[in-house]
Image 1 (cartoon, rainbow, N blue to C red):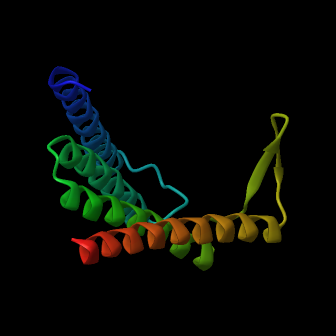
Image 2 (image 1 turned 45 degrees about the horizontal axis):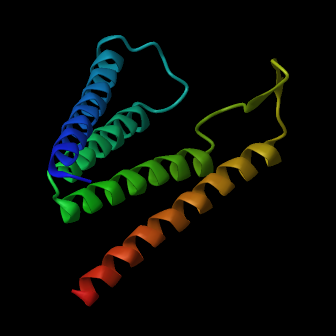
Image 3 (image 1 turned 30 degrees about the vertical axis):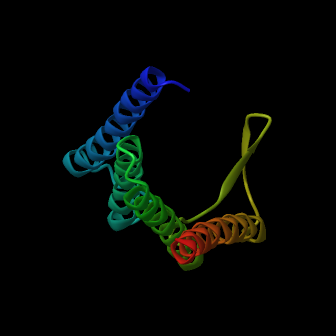
Length: 142
């Protein structure tokens, strides 16, 4: 990869990161301006928007070759997303769970919903631990 393609890739990553930041901020502003009575607490919506903003910031940091800053922001994104999902899933703040089979929406048993949340939470926690252990391993090797 020559220097020109690296610069172009950095420019594209920066643009993608800025667009991601803009999407997170715009979503938070629209939810604040036009609340429609969501079925989840407002803190969860704002927390999700903040997680998306941290993901965009991590992409921008990585495009400027700030690897440690990007890694910290990626870990904060994962921790925020997992924390919100875990809190909502375990506190049953979502309400009645539905699923769609062949386009037909049906009410799902509570066990299916809790199992899906548990699988997502465990998978996210494993991914978060993988990033943290990898980061600490690199710090010790350096």
